[in-house]
Image (cartoon, rainbow, N blue to C red; front, side, top):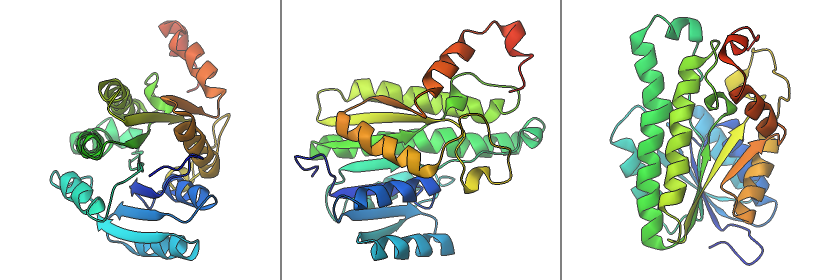
Length: 251
């Protein structure tokens, strides 16, 4: 259970090998030891992350999760909660893809949509059902400012994030009053292994900054947070930019 100071006792990381997921676990571990359930594919990276978190003071459980497997979300949540309730679940998996390939490869588009949207929606549905049953919990959905307005440079990725964001925003309203809450996190460009090799965008941030925003947002009972906060106003401006002008922007 989340204590009187807002510190969590159990954390589920769905896509637990992502830099943001790891940074979030480390941030929570600064407050108290906790149970961390690491849900990800069985890889060397997962084993390494599990070892790092144990060394940092966590009790780590590892469960398999594959966003490309339709049956995986239900199995994962069942295994993740078999050892006790989950206070916070961070949905942190996703693929960026390459727009040049996505513009011409229907299979690549389908694969990206399966991971970024379909699997994320199924995970959210199963998590919400489980948390309703336990009577408490927060689902943190890692969205993106790319979903605010699809840009020519990454419109397939942006469209999957837009759909995912809309689902979790609606889910937040549907669980109101149940003891369960949903926090949608919208980072800008994050310097991580996912974006390695790409030129950093203005207002680029770090996994640690996103983790700090997650912890603060959960503690304050927020529904939405932007990272950095200035991205809220930047994207508001872009949303209202006339289309003819928007198409000419180097985005």
